[in-house]
Length: 447
Image (cartoon, rainbow, N blue to C red):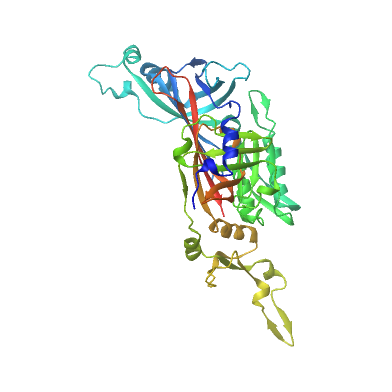
């Protein structure tokens, strides 16, 4: 039997969100283009496209598209495209009236900007007449995109490290090295209050030596240690620079929701019921509840992954090659397979036919990295659209609970946010509208 969501136990929470006070999700966005000592104001911000990949990347990828007069682009910006900064300003506006909300501060950040080159109309000269700055300003509006890079990240990408660290857990090397090196970063004449936030559950075993080759890039250090120094988590490994903090977390640990304070609860509501509503979330302390009012996608590929990649693995324990590899009694040496091999099954297949593969790294001492491979293949992605979103709520490694109706019953799935794609644009087309909103596509690893 199926029921309407209005008659389910989920509807109480839905109404609580719809009836909640106005949210700070309505903004007016502005930009200032800095070229050397000169500042230019674009006609309008067309869109801001931000991708957060907490699984395979370590920082945001942000593209801003601006409307510029043709002459400004061709003469003032394009010739100096290797020395462009852009300041983005976000002004909060009232939900109903559209006026500036003076109770909330204007937020701004200056980025290093890389032009996504589409050519220079003056150099190309493809028009019927010779193009000048004045004529282009009068006749042409050009949409130009820039990739924005955080100023602190720009410096961190240039830092290299190396050294030998003795009798310490590998995770503490990450904490120590990254904290010390990031203290050298200076933005606008100030040192940033950057910290390292490490989720519990890491490998705490002390290692005799943690060897970091000289010349290792700082932004690659955590992944290097996870892969080569005993591993950090057994359920995937991710690290990400967010809000001036490095987050270290397990990507595929779906059991953390009830163990931490900061969580996200998603209510999957029918797409045709609440599409386009203004209020789509509420915050209660460190818990956020949001409505997935847009399209939701989910496919359970666990069986296919187990058949192709296995639900178990085996590898020879490298540590035993140097000790306890064999026993010798009565002039006879015996090697025991069970003592020297690591063989693990993540979950028993219903058929009883477990697909246990030899690891691609057949002899190693990094069980945590090997278990992480299994953890990734034992789950799936659930993606949904969050309308009128507030991107700052989504943080790296955020545990998620998804509630949905199955007939007349409310069921739940647990997971971790892996990716978030935020897209900001105006509500109406044209150059005069300055009322922006953001929609987000969120992908969650669920088990």
